[in-house]
Image (cartoon, rainbow, N blue to C red; front, side):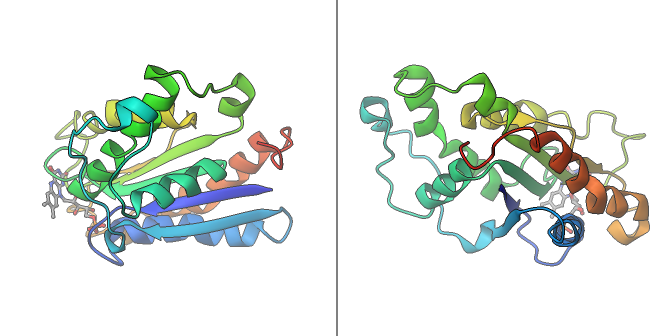
Length: 209
Ligand SMILES: Cc1cc2nc3c(=O)[nH]c(=O)nc-3n(C[C@H](O)[C@H](O)[C@H](O)COP(=O)(O)O)c2cc1C
């Protein structure tokens, strides 16, 4: 089975980011007629996720001592095999809610990298795919570095979780196009994306990964 977790990281409901993500979800529901797929949409702003306090308690046992929704959030992601993070560019970077949940994955990094309590096999990495969907007001033609700050942050998270990053969807120019509806080709790209995911994951026995 393919298990997909989508994270709607925009603080604004039903805006450009959520509409783009919902097109992907629609494509998945269509694909579900012929493939065994489970999909869940997480609305990040509805979760109780505190920022990392930097207490370094996780450096001992690889466990985060803050009792909030971040723990179940990452349990869900670790049990899935496709991860979509969708969010808008805020001040040339990642919105606060998204950065907070990313920082809270530090305990997973401790387990896997610092304390070497868990290892990630090549097969695990190859059968776990992650994508970023971004929306931004400005255009790449005016700000070629528009998405640059996001990439190292997201690749650090995906490496940490054992996910292989594939090319996502980067919706620049939302001001000029008067929203995501003005970029139908990107909505179509989101709708079709599940097909390449299914193709890539079919060779793996995803029940065991
Ligand atoms: C606080 C804030 C900061 C923003 N900073 C940027 C920015 O630096 N660059 C940019 O291109 N757009 C910026 N935007 C515009 C949003 O990225 C854009 O409108 C996005 O599509 C909003 O997504 P939403 O409809 O899901 O809320 C900003 C918007 C807000 C509210």
